[in-house]
Figure 1 (cartoon, rainbow, N blue to C red):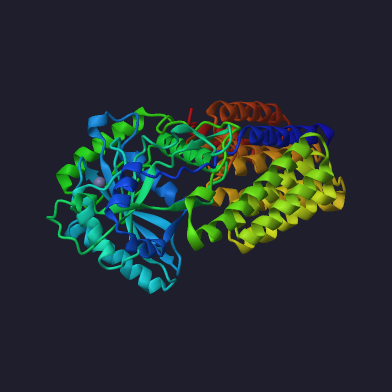
Figure 2: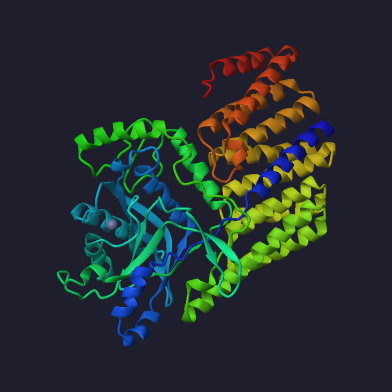
Amino acid sequence: MSKELENINDKDKDEIDSKEKDIPNNSIEENKNSQIDEKQAIEEPSENKEEEKKEKAVIIEAQAYKTIILYASRYANKSIPKEDWKEIYGVLIGHTDENLVYVKRAEALTFGHATDVQLDERHYVFIEEIEDKLYKENNNQFIVGWFHSHPGLNLFFSYIDLINHLGFQGKNSDAIGLVFDHELLGKKKLEKVEGTDHKITKYETGFEIYRINDITMDVNSPEFDNNYHSVDYIVKGLNKFFFANVLSELSALVSAGKPLQSAYGEDFTLESNLSSNIENKDKKDTENIANQKEFGDFKSDILEEIPKDNDISFNGEELFYGEKKEEFNHIKIKEENAEKLVYQGNEAFKQNDVFQGVEKYRNAIDAYQYIGNSQRILDLLKSVSEYCISSNHLILAEEFTDKLLKLSEKENQPFYEGEAKYLLGYLLLKQEQNELIREALAKIQDAAVIFEKVEDYVGAAICFHKIGKFYQSQLENFESSCLFYKEAIKNYNKAIIKSHPLRQAMWSKTETLIQKILDLKETIEELLPKLKDFKIKKMVKENLENLEYNF
Ligand SMILES: [Zn+2]
C-alpha cells in the first residue's frame, strides 16, 4: 500500500505545485478611450451629467466573455493570414435591474464578413428565434445587447455599428454594444498608481462596451459618427484559471479539428459542415475547406499568451462612480480580500502550517459565500482538500471533501462531484480497513463514470488506473486489475484529443498521456501470463490490439 500512496501523494504535490505556478492574472483594464471621453466632455452640456450618472454599468460573466473570445478567435487568429480575418456577430443575453445590466451568456449569430456589415433580415430572424426561446424559458432573461469583433482594427463604433446599435437601443435604452479585438487581449501595460511611486501591471480584456449618446440624432448629421460613448464594465468570475482554461480549451478543440465555438443554429460534426448554415451552399463548401486547413495548421498559440506575473493587481476602484461605485467596490474589495486569504493560505501550506492554511481557506470560502461565487468556492474546497490529504490531515480532508460533494451536487457541477467522490474514495482507502475497500473502490468508480460523462477523460483514466493498481498490488486480483487498466488506457488515449478545461494543464500534455499509456501497456503485458481466466485474458489482449491509438 505505501508505494501506492506515495505515488498518489506525488500526484497531489504535482498538482499543487502546478497550481502555485498559476499566478493570479485577474486584472481587468478599464478600456477608456480617452479620445471619446474628451469629445464627450466637450460635447455634453452639464445638465446631462445627472442623466449620465443613472446610466447602467455592465457585469459580464466570464462564461459569456469566453464565448466571445473563442468565437472571434475561430475567424481571426495567428494562423490565418491577416487579410482573411473575419468579423463575427452575436447577441448578449441576460437581465437588468435598477443599476446594472447583467450579461449571462453570449450567443454567436453569424460570421464571414471581412468588413462591417449591417445586420439584415437573416440576423433578425435568428434574433427573434432566440427571443422566442428566452420568452418560453421564462427565466427573466432577454437580449440585452449585441457583440461583434474588430479583428486587428482596434475598438470603436463604426457608422454601420451605430446603425446596427440603434436597432437595439431604440427598443431598450439600456441596450449595449460590445466590440472585441483579439489583438488587444492580454496586452500588458504598466500604470502608475496615483500619488505613489508604485506601478501596477494591467491586462487588456480586449473589449469595450458602448452606447449611443442620443438615439434621436439624425443619422446624416456630421456629429452622428461620434454619437456614442464607452460604458463601464466588470468581468465577473475572472480568476487565475480563466485564461489558462480558455487556452487549454482552444488547444483541445484545435487538435480535435473542432470549431472553436459554434454559432446559434450551427450543427457541426468533426469532419465537415464547419460553417454556419446561414451561408449559401457554394460559399459553405469553400468555407469548409478553408476552415479545415486553418484548424489543421495552428496549435495553441492562437491568442497572445497571457503572462502570469506576480505583480498584477486589479484596480476596481477606478471603474465606477456614484452609487454604482459603492456597490461594485463593495464586491471588489470583498473579492480582493478573499484572494488575499487564499494567497496567505497557500503560503501557510507551503510552510507546512496546515492549521493556519485551513483557517485562511475557511475565511476565504466564507467571503466567497457572501459574494455568491460558488464556482470559486468549489475550486477552493478542492484545493484545500488536496492540501489536507497531502499533508496527511485526513479528518480535515474529509470535512472539506464532504462539503465539496454537497455543493457540487447542489450546484450541478459534475466535474467537482467527480473530484469529491474520487477524493472520498481515496480517503477511505487510506484508512487501510478491509471492510471499507468495497465502498472506497465504488466511490472511485462512480467518479470515473462522472468524469467520462463530462468528457474529462484524464479524470476517468486516473480513477480506473487507481482502481487497477489497488486490485494488482493489494488484492492480487490480476483479472480485475487488467480490466481497469484497459479502461484507463482507453481514457488516456481519448484525453490526447480532448482535454477538460478544469483539469490541470499538465495533464493536457500529450507526452504525459502517451507515457501513461505505454507504462500501463507494459504492466498489462507483465500481468497477462498470470491471468487464470482465459476469456478475460483474450478480451484484454484483443481490446488493446484493436484500439486506435491517437499518437
Ligand atoms: Zn464594427
